[in-house]
Length: 189
Length: 189
DNA sequence: TGTCAAAATTGATATATGTCAAGAAATCAG
DNA sequence: CTGATTTCTTGACATATATCAATTTTGACA
Image 1 (cartoon, rainbow over the protein chains, first blue to last red):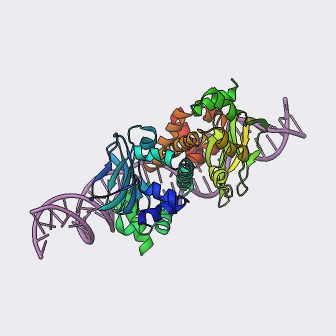
Image 2: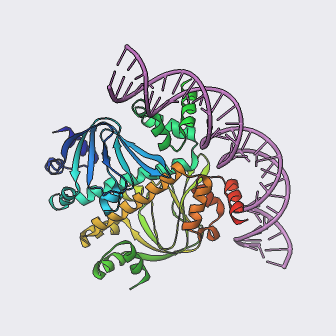
Image 3: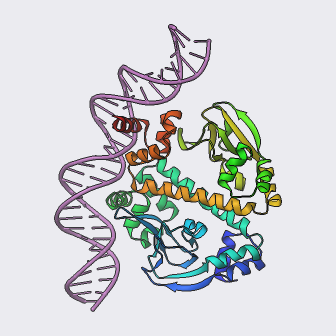
């Protein structure tokens, strides 16, 4: 079983045959640090799985960059709205490191419905999970302070703090780099 | 065509036959102001469509209530995590007014897959839309001030400001009732 | 309608976070 | 390795928002 198959099995509870059908449609590729998987306004026709590396999801708003999320090894990355509804992409997807990806094209993805009967169900459950995670995230912004959000990220994904420029983490948490830096100092000291 | 059918048609692009199959599984019911459709920790076995009235979605955190959302006429309301994955409900669903609902039970809902072949696809698209709306909402918390979030809500759902206790709106926007009140005064005066 | 409880407002003040500018540290290209 | 560039940190200060306490207003209902 390839690493991709193992990872997919982690997300979708499927038997080996279906696993093969799914995994075989993903094409491995390497991209360099700083490359864009997608640019805002374009059409998103790919879904990528990150074998290694980091991808930043961000958007330009009033000449500022707002980092929505950092996608890490073992996770998928795409612009769901554009990929699903063929709307212009709202996010830029840019690698923060050299990355090894497995990428599936939209056409190939949509054919999965015909080949894997369970696919729609799996897909629904997957998106539902994503929705639930986002609900939690909104909730954190409703009652947690910047410092509490910092601490929670530190608990949940400490590895990000070594690997990602801190300005992106601060943006993703909804605070300025200066505030982030001060909280950091306080927690370390 | 009943009002429910019209509304469902608004969410799901289906032909009349399917529409009937879907709508016929929803049972109309009346609930009084203050009633709970769901309590945190219980299992959520229902999805309701709001024909009229308002439902508050909130959670208790550290002896405070955090209002996640106010669901209004023409929309669905449930705890997606509990409804989909049979986990304990994270939200309380409480009516803010007398409500007319159309409610579907989980069992009946899940049978739709067998009766309406397109159901999984529709469901997937529906949840994807919800996900995208939440993404926008997270984004707003990353770069907008309390006042900007207030103004945006006022633009998008001005009717809420007459119909919903303002403390719930303030919580939903992630600010205190006092701050909400001051912003309100500023915008009115 | 009058009474009471809840909600909303207001003022005073505290705290958290943002802004701007400067300097230190880290990173990158050659 | 070195210089240049970017990122991070720090300080001083401004602003936004929270907190607490005291009214006022609203709304439910006896």
